[in-house]
Structure formats: C-alpha cells, structure tokens
Amino acid sequence: MMSWEWSDIFCHPLWVISTVILAITVRAQRKGSWDPRACPVSLNGKTAIVTGANTGIGKFIALDFARRGARVILACRSEARGTSALKEIIELSGNEDVHLRLVDTSSLDSVQKFATQILEEQKELHILVNNAGASGLPKGITADGLETTFATNHIGPFLLTSLLLDLLKKSAPARIVNVSSLNHRRGKVDFSHFKGENLTYVMDSVYNHTKLHNIIWTNELARRLQGTGVTANSLHPGVVMTEVMRNYNFIVRFLFNLVGFFFFKSSKEGAVSTIYCAVSEETEGITGKYFDSDCSLVLAAPPARDPALGVKEFEICERLTSKL
Ligand SMILES: *[C@@H]1O[C@H](CO)[C@@H](O)[C@H](O)[C@H]1NC(C)=O
Ligand SMILES: *[C@@H]1O[C@H](CO)[C@@H](O)[C@H](O)[C@H]1NC(C)=O
Ligand SMILES: *[C@H]1O[C@@H](CO)[C@@H](O)[C@H](O)[C@H]1NC(C)=O
Image 1 (cartoon, rainbow, N blue to C red):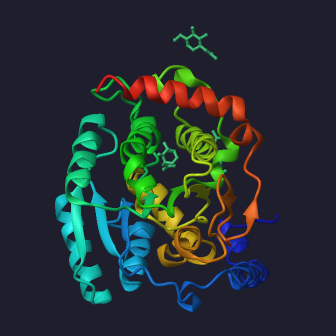
Image 2 (cartoon, rainbow, N blue to C red; image 1 turned 180 degrees about the vertical axis):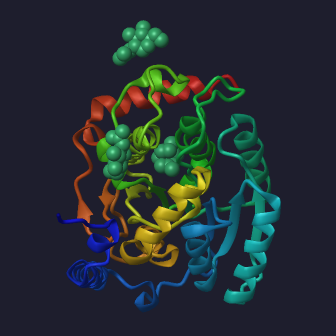
C-alpha cells in the first residue's frame, strides 16, 4: 500500500529546483527596462504633485522628482505617514523644496479643498501623477453617494485633475500621468458601478473596473488637451509589492508577500514606468497612450480606446462631480 504526505510533493527536489529556475528566469526578465538613473533630465524650476506619495511606488516617484530638483508636493491622506515620507524624501534627496498637503481622494470635498489650496499656493504645475489608489476596500458608499473604490481610484482623481487643469495648461509643457494597471483588461464598463450598483466584490473585480475607467478617462482627456502642450498618459506599474494590499487579511497578504518575493517588482522598480512617462525625453509630446511596466508602448484594452465611451465617461464624471 502506497502512502504519501503533502510534504513529499512540495519538498521534492525537482519541484524546488524548477521553482528556483523559474524565479530566476522571471527576475532576469525585468532587466533591460528604461533606467531612471541614466536619464539626465533635470526638473529644476518645475513643480510636481504626486498623489499617494507616502508609501510604495508613489514615494519612489516623488523621491526621483526631488532628486531632479523639482518642487514636489506629496498629496497624502494620512498626516502621520505623509510626514514621515516627507522627512525621508528631503533627507535622501537633499532637496528642501518638498511639501506635504493632505487629500483624501475618496471625498469630493477633500479634493476640492486640496485643489483650492494648491491654486492659492502655486503659480505653476508641470507634472501631475495620479498614483493614489486602493484595492480590496470593503463594500461601501461615500458621503457623496459614490461607490468607495470608484470614488477613491477614479472619480476623486477625475475631479482633482479637472480642478488643476487650467494651472497645468498655463504651465505647458506639462504632463499628466495616471497609474492604471494591467488589471484593467479584466474590467468592465457599466456606469451604474459608480454608485455601487451591479457590483460583485470578488477577486479584485471593482479595482479592475476602476483601472479600466482610468484609461478611458485619460485617453479622452488627451483628446481634449490636443494642442495645449499638456499630455495625458496611463501606465501599468507592474505587479508590485505595495500597500495596495493593506486592506486584505493576514493570510492573503502573507501569500502575496511570499509569491512576491520571487516574482513581483519592488516599489522602486514599480515606479520606473511612471517616471518614464513623467520626465523622459522619449515620452515628450506623447499623449493618450498606455505604457507597460517595462516602459514599452502597448495597446490598452479595446474599451479603453473607444472615443465614444470616453465622451460618455467625461459626461458622467462631470455630472457626478459638478454639485460642488
Ligand atoms: C444595474 O442595476 C439596476 C438596478 O439597481 C438595474 O436596473 C440595471 O438593469 C442593472 N444594469 C445592469 C447592466 O445589470
Ligand atoms: C482582476 O484582475 C486580476 C489581474 O488581471 C485577475 O487576476 C482577477 O481575476 C480579476 N478579477 C476579475 C473578477 O476579473
Ligand atoms: C487619470 O485618469 C482618470 C482616472 O482616474 C482620472 O479619473 C484621473 O484624473 C486620473 N487618475 C488616475 C488614477 O487614473
């Protein structure tokens, strides 16, 4: 009679060896992407805003801009976490012109206040990185009557960008960069989602929808900005070990970290495609495009490239944010 244990399977040398080979192969594939350290572009005299800059890739994006000499505004939700990121970025970059401003993108009121403050304080704005986003948020409706993940990842950033658009135009050439995700390919367009209708909360589905809307919106924005000197692009940062996962339970995070140790990018690596869109000479003047995590130009999913959907997207987002 044969008997076996799970450990016989999982600890089998062949399994271990093939996993290690696979991990090394996958890691090796990350090489060859654009290298921010080799990019000489200076941001002296430029002003940049990075949302969600207190942690993960947002922090590395902000640090890169600070090292290039930009005035950097960290747009963060938590004052405590924002302050510690601020100190760290100033220390590492030696640039004192880095500032913390608070915003919670899930609240239209908070976005409005943030934008008002920026418009009062800044004469120019050259780079806006919409990086803040969350996945795995519990089901819920915000005070504005919007679904929580949609409000945080999409409608809040939409309003923020709209309110800062004139300042960006005035400062042209300027760049808007939206951190989307490969997950957008699994997203579906149903505008009733914005108010929390017809949604199922499984396997990141809501996050995936919001990331699709990010690109639809960005592309329509790019069409509207033709000729203004302001560009708008979106990108996939890569599968990054970030605190986007912080809303998941311990087990999910543990597994994510375990797998991630081998296969995922660090936050620093995840920041690269955003920095590429925001500062590189290669992307100057490029607009309405979607970049992969290795900085290559790729086609977003078909709905994201549909101009008719873009028009509708704009109409609906404007209506939802216009009661202010
Ligand atoms: C979404 O839900 C509403 C009711 O909340 C329903 O009338 C509508 O048909 C649904 N739409 C889709 C696409 O299922
Ligand atoms: C969301 O996207 C991720 C990554 O592409 C995928 O693994 C997951 O299954 C998607 N969720 C749904 C409900 O399609
Ligand atoms: C860029 O595109 C849209 C998606 O939100 C806009 O809503 C938003 O202004 C901006 N942000 C992100 C994260 O994509």
